[in-house]
Amino acid sequence: MMQPIVSASTSESSSTTAAGSPLDRVLVRGLAWTGAVKWLSQILSWLSTIVVARLLVPEDYGVVAMAAAVLGLITLLNEFGLGAAVVALRHLTETQIAQIHSLASLFGISGFLLTCAVAIPTGQFFGAQEVPLIMITIGAGFVILAMRSVPSALLEKDLRFKFLAFLEGGQSLVATLTTLIVAWFGGGYWALVLGGLAGQLAATTVIGLSRPLSYAWPTIDSMKEAIRFSSHVLTSRVSWYVAASSDVFIGGRVLGQVAVGVYSLAGTLAYVPIEKVTALLSRVMPAIYSTVQNDPPAMRRYLLLLTEALSLIVWPMAVGMSLVAHDFVLVVLGDKWSGVIAPLEILACWAGVRSIFGLVGPLLYVTGNSRVAMLNGLLCVATYPVGFWIGSHWGVVGLAWAWVLVQPLAFIQPYKHVLRATQLSLWGYLRALWPALSGITLMGACILGIQHAISADWPLAIRLGIEILIGGGVYIMSVQLFHRQRLVMLLQLIRESRKNSSVTS
Image 1 (cartoon, one colour):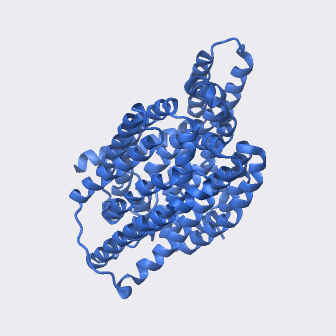
Image 2 (cartoon, helix red, strand yellow; image 1 turned 45 degrees about the vertical axis):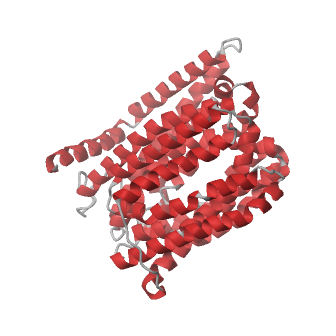
Image 3 (cartoon, one colour; image 1 turned 90 degrees about the horizontal axis):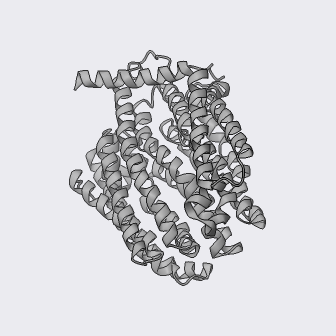
């Protein structure tokens, strides 16, 4: 039977979980560095997205989305989950790591060759002649990415989050500048292709110089455990990608290139800000969870702490974007993108819900439930495409609603096993979401009231500014008023971690 709730702020008996402990300091500093760099790069990326959207047309986004739908799957096959194995399996020897590094490089070469093989058939499937060359160009980066997979995992395992933060920030900067330059000079969809490739090349070069790693020929006996673990990770990731990308496949086939371009941009606007927050957690949390994998109270404490903190940050962003989507799209992107409004309203709101689920996945792997993650991914493959095909009959809005109706099925088994492993009740978990939920409820009511009260004759830019300022202010005040104690506890943890860090440095 599951144990009662243990507050996210409760001090555990284990030294690794006490407030201000060394691991807490690593967590806080890792999140701080990663968050600071990611948000700076996100501001630049967000501005770039707006500028590039004005320079390109929906067809450009559509043709790249079609190519990316296949390339994303090959990317997962290319990595084979080997990086996750290096982080989670803490007893690997140097020889085993060198063998894993060699195997990753072989997968990278195979990924490029596979891309070349499927490029032309993919273009024929979508009826887009631009797709094959796009795929081959991006596929050249698979070899580069494979060379950094294991070195990056080792840096993560060593908790070198500051270095990794600046590395990813530099990659984002190179990618953003390249995209802007190519788009400005009329490169069209090549701006989206070459930007990402340039960023990958820069980051891989730096990480190779910073964490050089030798090669060794892989042997089955030595790598048996790592391969078994990686196969679970790979199956889970591939299954998830196939399921999650089926909206673009089905949308491109049923609705056409323009519609899928509109839908793709709506997804970018909905998910990019949220994913920047969850991405910094995904960089830090696997290594943190791995460190305390034999300490259920510690895992429970970090799960509750991060769930509460993440929801407080992400949910107002998600719900706020959903509520102001109409004014935001017309003001920022212009009338030609008005078709983005309806799917954005749905996808932005749902992005907040799915962001919380991202904290659960890493716990499955470190608690010995990698097979559960694999089976859950296969469930997604069986259900998502059906939902998207049905939803496509109602256009891009139907595709967006399919996420809301189908994805909750993927939450059931992972939550069941994680709550059991961390000795946490469902009610205890939901309590961690209450501060954010109550705050966005009041914020939403305020924004809807403003939209009803302000005359339609007002300039959209002014109306948008009022909605954002007042809505955000109401959210902050409501959380401070009704959940001040929780905020104080979170801030106290940060202060103690910083204070102890200064003492020990």
